[in-house]
Amino acid sequence: MTEPLPLSGITVVSVEQAVAAPFATRQLADLGARVIKVERPGGGDFARRYDTTVHGESSYFVWLNRSKESVTLDLKTPAGRKVLEDLLPTADVFVQNLAPGAATRLGLGAEALAARFPTLISCSVTGYGSTGPWADRKAYDLLVQCQTGLVSLTGNEYGSARVGVSVADIAAGMYAYSGILTALYTRATTGVARAVEVSLFEALAEWVSQPAHYTRHGGTQPPRIGTQHATIAPYGAYTASDGRDVLLTVQNEREWASLCDQFLRRPDLVEDRRFATTADRVAHRRELNEIITARFGELDSQQAREHLDRAGIANAEVYDVQEFLAHPVLRARGRWQDVLLPSGKGVPSLLPPVGLAGTVPRMDAVPAAGQHTLGVLAELGYGADDIDTLRAEHAI
Image: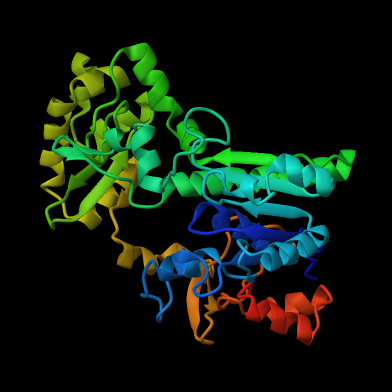
């Protein structure tokens, strides 16, 4: 028997846009929370217009906003702010990623909210933090990739590159999500509602801590070397005779010996002092890559993977996104499930990666902008005349 989802009964109000905050709240919705997404009248979240590739909808918006209710409010109008003020007492969590300073100006800062709604958990997603010298700076994903040094680590000897997904936004969204869950637990066990704050910069800074340690104590940062690993060798992609790339990784000396003996057919390399340790293999990466590349040139990609499997060496063919969509693991484990668009058309979407025994994740529709405004207003006691007045004032 399927049990209720763990966040059933929790209401989240989110004044959100773009990626970071919507990523956090979508995961709360996946777990059963009611997420009321507040959008601007006349277009809504600007991520709705990032592209139109998913049957006219934005790929970003479809990914981030299933299972939510959309309410349009103009928070620059007194009437719009009044509706939000009426909505917040019904909520357990309030999330916002407004422009720097905007939440404070609207009376939606953590301290102001705590004074008015002492049981409400507020979560602010900022660029560089709500205090400090960069508190007023806008921050977008690629800017933060640059500021944390990530772009300088990604790419190859010919130049740097951005990470191909919104990694700063995703990092901040993940920490906001886990922070909110922690705050809900704290409130349940102590009765105290604690505010949560996450910045894109500090979230991604945590993710680049390993190269930060390496650079601080080693004197130079890890080099850009494409699919190779900066501090482990062999670890990277090699091209087989059919032109396909296969990535392999050796994690310890036992695997290195097996690679030499069973894949490279060069057991003598185990005793070669150039390759005795991981550090030695990194220092002599060029010579090692020449040996491995020559062996891959004798095998097609399937043969190479079969030999590596027999040797117990972790490996994977380098897929493009089209090949990932047809991945046999996703298919066999039933990871794709249709989610409805505002048009009513279903699109395959991935189930949440965390499975909870006895529960079925929520995979409800992506809302149209303002689709739930009238229903939510009715719940708050607004009548037809009130709604007409809100429309006349362009507050909804």
